[in-house]
Image (cartoon, rainbow, N blue to C red; front, side, top):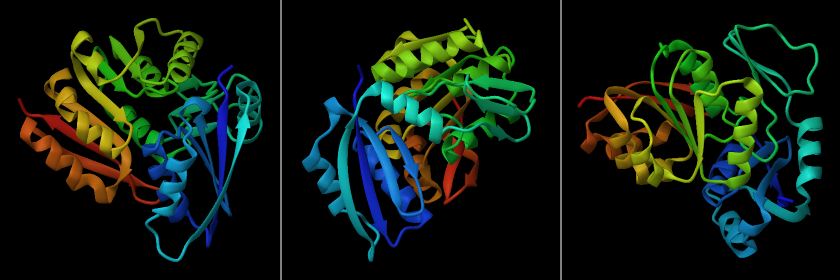
Length: 284
């Protein structure tokens, strides 16, 4: 059983800025799933990765002045966590009137050209978070027929699945968390796309993967800047890179890291509280 720690953080005063920033810094600390509400944030991390002192240090260093944070931690059995997520947190979502994302238990689903079934379990990526929907919007606007795609940090596999639905092949998803990688495989099978290959691992696997025409990474700023050279080597000349998992204010940090490798911004989009998707091109 993949047990998780449910971390409940109450924030006073609470607003979207505070919960988004807290989710971002907890993600850097290994937390995987986040449920904001009007009084704070609930976050989940595998029990084996939970470090109470590290978590306390993250909360103590919360960068917004004038906010008080209190927290509690509870162990949640994997099966119970899945059930609660399905009942309370994951509802069908439509992106750009073209893509509907829903779970296998949902009824009365809107009809869209792209219908993706995601049973998220422990994995991040249902389309509800701004970073996921931002990349979905970009994939819907990008010609993908016959293009090779790498989805780094694939989570539920949602972005890889959409790419395959739009004609991309081959499609490779890489996920570092074993539970998420297993979930991505299940979702790929459910949606019937054998052209998608899912691997367990990190950026060190990229040299063994087919070169990408489109490279996707919805992770976080620190991982992206650390691994940008590996991303560069995995992308064909003239290829497109779609990056998210960070704020609009972080764009100069990403572009500065990418510049030595001939990767330059062509555009970016913004959603929610300044979450952004950065589109870049590899010049050579």
